[in-house]
Length: 109
View: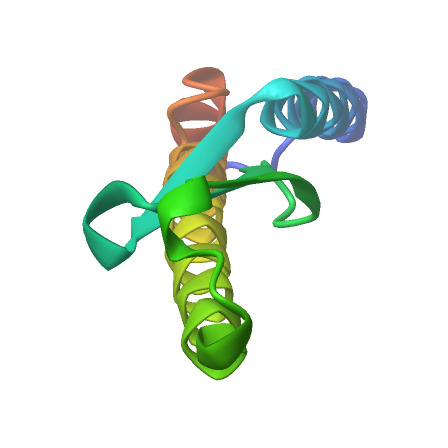
């Protein structure tokens, strides 16, 4: 088995670090919206799952139904955060799977 060149490994490591940083920046810019209650509540999160906005249809703003509204907000937030998490996992799987650095397989194989 041929031993990998240390310089090549260092270059590939730097390339991977740059690609991961690029993906993280892109993910932060991507927004995901979760919808609950048939569209009366929408929660928007960034790619890391941080809540960036909430939209509530005035139809559901009833002082006697505050608990229901709170539940709808939580449901919308969970859906949006789940979408952000799935995108992050897809992007990181591509990096880990060698899609970002096709030369790595030939170097180590």
